[in-house]
Structure formats: C-alpha cells, structure tokens
Length: 259
Ligand code: KIV
Image 1 (cartoon, helix red, strand yellow):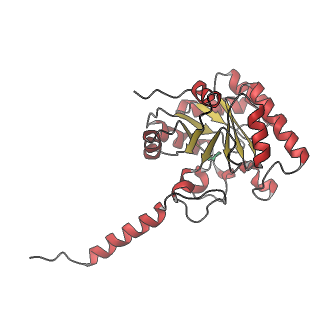
Image 2 (cartoon, protein in one colour; image 1 turned 135 degrees about the vertical axis):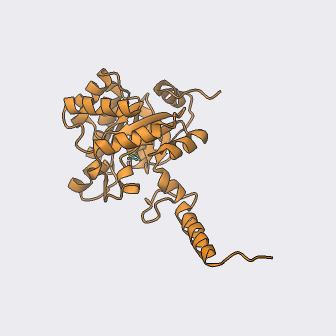
Image 3 (cartoon, rainbow, N blue to C red; image 1 turned 180 degrees about the horizontal axis):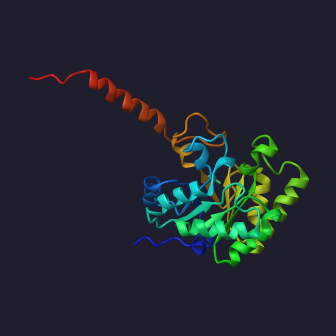
C-alpha cells in the first residue's frame, strides 16, 4: 500500500538523496492523475490564475479562487502531500496570513506557500505557530512582477546572492519544511541547497536543488501560448486536443456509409 506523504517524508527524501518531484495540480482529475503517477508533492499554485483562469499574471488571483481550486484538488484525496499558495496581498499582516492560511487548510491544503524572505518572516512564524506546515518561495517572486517590471533571474549580483542565502536560512530557522527557489542562478541555488537541512525545490534554478517543481501545463504542452525557457515540454496535449476535436467535427460532416 502507498503511504500518505508527510512533510517529514519530504524532508527525509533530502536526507537520503532522493530527488523530490513536485508538480502543480489545480483540480480533481489532475491531482488524481499525478498522484497515480507517484508524484509525492502537489501544489495548487497561484499559477492557476495564468494557465487556467486567463489572467495576465498571478496578482489577480483571489482567496476565493484558491479555495475553490484547493478544494477540487483535495477531493482527489491524494497520497501526495497537497499544498496551496497564499495569493497576492493575502498575507500582508500576521492576522491576515494566519486566517487565510487556515482558510486554505479548511479547503483541503496540507501546507501553504507564500513568497518572500525576511519581509514576511513574522507571518511565516505565525502560520507555523498555528500548526500549519509552511513552504517558502525565494528568488524570482511572480507576485512582484508588476513592481519589478518582468520575471528576472535572481542571484547574479553579490548582494542578491547573500540576501537569498540569508533569507533561506531565516525561513529554515523559522520552521519551513521546504523552500521553492524560482529562477535563481544555479550556483547560488546549489549553495543554498547545501547550506540547508530542509529541501530546496527548484524551478528554473538548475539541477542541484533537492527537488524540481514545474507547472504541469508547461510539462505536458497544455498552455502552448507561452512556455518558460527552462521547460522542455514532454507532450503536446493542446495540439492533440485540437486535432482530435477537428477530426470529430469533420466526421460529423461525413454520414456513415451503409452496406
Ligand atoms: O504558482 C505556482 O505554480 C508556483 C510554482 C510553480 C513554484 O509557485
């Protein structure tokens, strides 16, 4: 029997050198498929806003939308550990962070993730003190896209490198069970991974993180209008869907022949 994955098991994977595979799942069938494929860590990311809800970036995603998608994915009752993102502006204060983290847990999340380091540390500590497992997110922070004017690689300059390393240590000391490193230069991602006891889960941050996370739509070619440079799609399901429905439509015009 496959065991329910816990945060302790995710941490233990780093300790025994097993790479952690993590993917996004925003609904019941995807959570069920990824779970059946043996993915141990699933995230209802706020990327749902871009690849499912049609927003230009993640800053439009609301708590109600996150609850809706977390609940859908949780209905799959995965053995995988299932987490949900705290969306833009939902953790500006300690009180808001704790009450919104509790809402995601009530919807079915087993951990929450929020973006940032020292600037959100009081919120992170309060979430963990409330008994909710927390995953950090450092490097390029998509919820800051408007103020930063785009999605930029982090860690290229020394001050950024040092800040990332210090923030990662602060999150780990605060009790985060893992940290996503997004678009961090590979040498800095490697250094952070080596410096921490808890696992790093990289996205566009090189091969030396303790695990990798991708937006599932990017991996399977489900959002063909934009694919991040660091992803090589392993399927082209959008193309497959278009050709299958095209064939079905054409077949409607051809009446079946009778013998
Ligand atoms: O929103 C998201 O899907 C994420 C991951 C890709 C890390 O934050």
